[in-house]
Length: 203
Image (cartoon, rainbow, N blue to C red; front, side):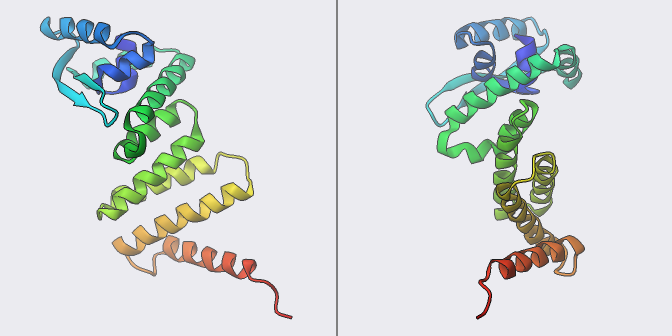
């Protein structure tokens, strides 16, 4: 249980851990509650509600180091498996409201070796952060997405997505700095170049 909890995060819900292990949620809650009452590893921190109606007990590790030690002892293949299960359950639980936990879903998708989904959620997280004026946060999300994208095979779809991400990054750089910023200029130059290539030749 602690292994799955370490994958879920320093703060976690019993629903996420239950999904990772494929066992009933009430068993996870009973186990975590026992540990919490004996002040071992975790403490209870109240219920967590998901948009699909799931209500789960929330817990957190007493110390970040506890979580890191347990996580680091997991074989890499097991980490990937548990991250994927948690991502799938949270996607289902949040549905159309997945943007609310886009950063978390990006993390689990990336650690679950699903780069395409990780990029999708990083882009969404960047768009949402930019929309509320958190330009530094948005910049970080777009940069992480572009880094992951660079690891994928080159295709026309990849090129389109790269341009979209660079435009998002260019927008937040312009808002936080200026049009003269080199990366902002590069993004807009690439967009103009693509538009020129898309135009039919003059007869």
